[in-house]
Image (cartoon, rainbow, N blue to C red; front, top):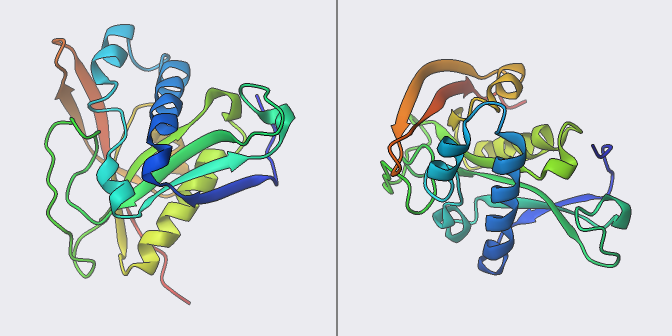
Length: 198
């Protein structure tokens, strides 16, 4: 487990980051979700329910966190930035899932009445339990709020529910998402009202 780092740098993801993001998400899912999902559920969900929605990159609402610290690099490679985590928000109706995910709804939301969708927050296992998920979530919420949204909604994995509850999210329903291999993946729909602007 890595300690919190003042060296974290968050930036908007670009198309050139897509291969590295795919690798990070797979490492995160395999390393951190195994306590809540079976191997068959993980295999069926990777790349569909659990994965990267590149529409968020095109919309410039997806972010990644890098660290320059060589001793904190998952690869231990000196002189290169390590990708520690990622996450974003969406101004579109799709609640969760990758490009090939189920139930895609690309229509735009209305900030005056709709909730921004918090999407695909993943942390590399080498950076788990040191506050990085909270750091990404705060950045995502601030960005959505700056775009005029007053509420947030997400489709959380079972693994993420304790963190999101601590951050003020309330469970609305549990959804069993059918997977291509015959399994089903439980996803928890959660909502939160944004704090009033001062």
